[in-house]
Structures are given as structure tokens and as C-alpha cells.
Image (cartoon, helix red, strand yellow):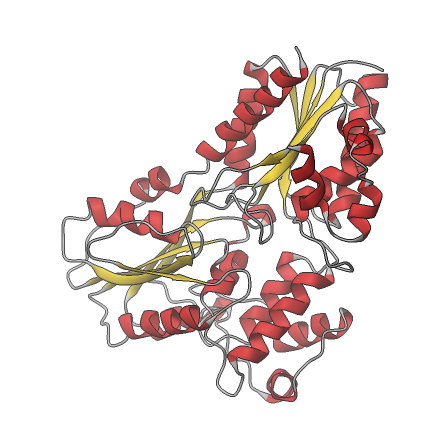
Length: 423
């Protein structure tokens, strides 16, 4: 294969993984029976609109409701209102949408059904703060957490406890109606209660947990938030509080995406080595670790002989210290490229399955054996780019960004490293 062919193989494997993450088939497979009373669809996340459209097109009875998705991720619905709002920083559109969702589920009876469509991104999109906490305070805390290097589970723990709707509070508002929650998982291990901070599912965390996370990462805590976390009684739904009329199903996940990537890699002639969907940590450091595994495969045939494809998912984090542009997949790839040191037998691609790496317009990028050489010829130092959190600019100059546009799903990151020769 020539370099162009390895690039194309990486793209084909990526497209197979994203196609396997399409939530529509899973939603239709798990559609509940129509109730005696009303059916109300609510939801939030990057896949919420396309999930709602699937139900809207197949539900034969009366139907209504509201879902919130990210700007540019909408889908046409006739009976379900779709609101677009800010992500990853919450905005007023998300706050208004959350209030509309609460209104949509108010006054229901035990004869009614709520179908909750929850996917990654819903934590930011469903942005109603707790009483006494302002949207501006929530925006500031979210922004600082995203730059701090905190993991997604830690960020969502904080979000639950400063929210008026997450941590099971939406389920409480919908009682006594039956609730079916359909989930697209972007959480390592598919912890249902952590996806979009679990608006309809029980919460095992506490306000003390949220306060400890904020203090550990040195986040400036407004007095109103601190007072609430210290003094307010526990008010998220706990496992013992979950009504028997509530159930959930994961309809799309990273496991399915990685399995599809493995099949596609095998079809391309590479033996897959799937590391799983629990991969977390600082993005550049995870990239260096993947480089080490790839070099071991290339030079020692361990843990697997080449030609092979090292495949992983999960969500890394980025500690922002510079003022450049870039997301966690770009930083992963920069760390990988530096760790590979121009090895002639490794190529890689890493993307966020939703099509947006961080807050940029790319899904991710590609690394080829000549990446460092081409970068040097353009005066680009990837170490300096990492130091300034400016890897988007570097890969853009190299012509190696991967741009998919919104995919309307979100099962987190997909990383593919092809190993095809020794040095």
C-alpha cells in the first residue's frame, strides 16, 4: 500500500465504526408499546433529534414532546419539537429548552408514557441550573472544568448537583407516568446513570463528591454553589427511589462501534487488537502509550504481529494551558506522532464519533509515517503545538484534518492505529 491507500483504509474503518453507532435502528428495536394515555417524548444530546425523528416517523398513536440537541445537529420532526442549544458550554437556549421539557412532562398520570432520548452532550444541553444558581455561574464552572483535565465522570458528577433536571430529577417531574429511557452511550463502560448526567436515572453520587471534585481541580466556586453543595439536603434520585415503572436500554455504544471497526480492519487485511472503550487520561499521554504499543507490535510482534490494527475508544481529557485551537483527538495524535518518531510502518486516525473534536469543525485528524517530516518542512513543531494546545492549527496546515460534519450520534472517541511494517 502507498500512503494514500493507508489514509483511505483508515477512513473506511472509521466510517464503519460511525455507521454502527447510528441510533435509529436501536431506537426502533426498543420502541415500547403505546400506553392507554398520552405519549410524551423528551430528551437531550447530540443524537436526540435523529432519535426523535425515528420515533416521529414510526409511532402510530398520538405523540408530542420536546428534545434538545446541539446547534447544527437537528432533524425534521412533525410532532416533536426540536430545540438547538449550546455545547459544550450551556446557554440560554438550553435553559429554555429544559424548562419546556419539564413543562411537557408535568401533570401526567400513571396511564401516560414518557420516552426519554438521552445521548452524550445532554449534560450541557439540558442546562437548567438549580434554584439559587445562575446560568452564568454554571457556564463558568463548566468552562473551568473542561479546561482542568477532569474526566467526564467527574464533570458529570458536578453537573448533576448544580442542575434542576439531571440526576433523576426529570423522572421525578414526570411521575407517576411510566418512563422508558433510550440511551446512546458516550461513557466508558456504558454506565447508564452517567450518560448526560442521568436525568431519568438514579444517582449514586453526592453533593460532597461534587464539592471535592471542584476543590481538587482548583475551580473557583461561587458562594451560592458552595452553600448549596454544603447545606442542601440530598435531592437527586437514589437507586432505592427508582419507580418500578422506569426502565432503560442502551441502543448504541462504543462497544458496537469498536466491534464494527475491528471487522472493517480485518476486511482491510489487519488483525484487530481492541483495547476497549475504557481508555481515559490526558490525551497526549494516551497517544504516547498507543505509540509504544504500536512500536512493540512493529518491532517485536508483541502483543500482536503486524499487520495489525490497534483500536480503542473512551474519552481522554485535555488540560488547557495555552491559547491555541484543538481537541482531545488532535492532542492524542500529536502525542502519538511524537512517540512514533517517524516510524515508517505506522499510520493512525482518531476522531470524536459526533464529528466535532472539542469545539472545532473537524472530527479529528490523521497521522502518517511522514507527519513529523512534513511538519518540519513547514516549520511546525508538534511539541510546541501541544504546549500551546494548538494541534488543530498544526494538522490543518498539514492537510490532515478529518472533517465529517455532524454525525448525529455520539459514542465518544474512535482511535485506529495501523501497524504494517518494521523500521
